[in-house]
Image 1 (cartoon, rainbow, N blue to C red):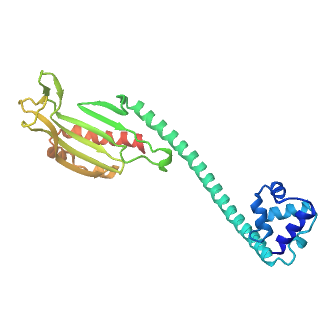
Image 2: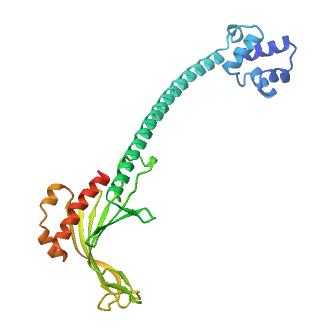
Length: 279
């Protein structure tokens, strides 16, 4: 309460109304009234201004006002506490900014080098872009390869290729699908050799299924309508030199009903293309 009395004394000694004092310190008249009756207190910055403006020391201004002294002491401690917290926040944010900046630099360097390598490999093997982001290669002997690139975005926080980055090679084993006009439209059986990003080599055979109860525009050489491809065989092998060297291509080609030399060519050359693209 002593502080309130001193504020009243200072105001009256300087012939100031509560409105005039409030205007001087950018507060409301009610705030001045609350200070004077001890309902609330000025903050430390305002107390220092009052002390300087009216040439009265803080010791005199706060004399015997223990409650206010305790309040100021608490504010000072809280201010120090908040400053420490703010300091830690600034340090943490700064470290995060530095770490993110390093990541961005590494990401774009990785992306640049990887895409350059990817594009160089496409040119090396004469892949063609079909306009939809799929690159195709006619490898001869009715072997066709397709590759799609899914490069991680910046905020994916990944520095490696996505799982969908695979190389698909297809060996056409029976090319006899025709549409109703008689024009050639595709093949009714095939073997797919898929080099996946999880280090596997997946070899599957597919045949075109007859589903005459469904409407279709495709027919095979026997006149059967063809609606979809059904998988008839499935083999999963590690995509590494040792595993590939141990493949019995004669036995596997017999199970898949495909020429052994074509299968071997597709697996060995496809593995090399995949490594050139993604490794």
